[in-house]
Image 1 (cartoon, one colour):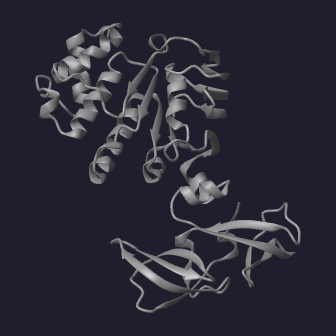
Image 2 (cartoon, rainbow, N blue to C red; image 1 turned 90 degrees about the horizontal axis):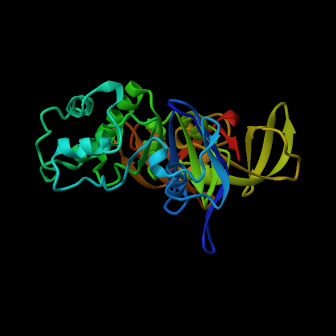
Image 3 (cartoon, one colour; image 1 turned 45 degrees about the horizontal axis):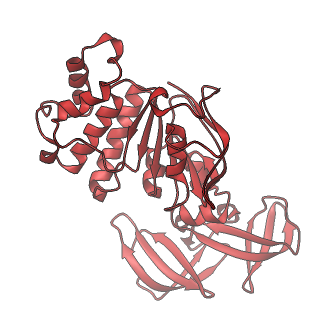
Length: 344
């Protein structure tokens, strides 16, 4: 396996800066995800790691060795693309074996033995003689994964491999991919625009925006303590407030928000008169709270099974909250504890 480091990587395409000083450290055996909106630079980052695009500036290192400029076929990486790129004129077994065209199978196994081993790994035993056209999208995705794993690479790169699949199949397959990654203990970099997918599958993740890394950390860190407003608003639902600090006492700051006084745990570094931005996750807004009263005018309610997502307004601000049941009133009295607010 391998650890991967990007050191101030910049990539320019003419006058366009696709990556702007990206620095990321990915640990040996880690499942690391790059997540962000379209055009944020996540696929360009993956291509720099793979060797398809050399950085304009900065360096890519494997186990501390600078491999910038090293050709793709000398980097010991397996790659699964968004469209799977299976060969329609080859059977499933032949597609998987194609991954061994330049290298012997690991462990001294024969080509047929390696194909059989990988078919078992991806739960496709008995499918070796089928054509790709006879497979579902999820099965094709697993064949592409098996082909990438055939030579036993030290690093696995996955570029939005499930974006063409329906939601239920994506949920099933991401568990499948995670299990395989853990079984093989292979360093994996995964690209997705789906925040839920990134949170559920990753050991750590980097949220990207406009060619830069906004925040990197565990899913829990990124969700619970977003570092920037962009992260707060991009990763999951959130309620973001802006206001002016009017006081600080006993670890709590009072903030004037649209003429209302709200209290939040003082993260330090602010003074009376400063403008601050903070957020409160929907599940942290509760009924019958003793502090930070918000009377929400209900606009719409979406019943989601286990919870109900309610959209409303407070002082002309859109508010989203998750409740256990569907509200039967037009106004919801809600609140939150000072410690449930995160300063951005």
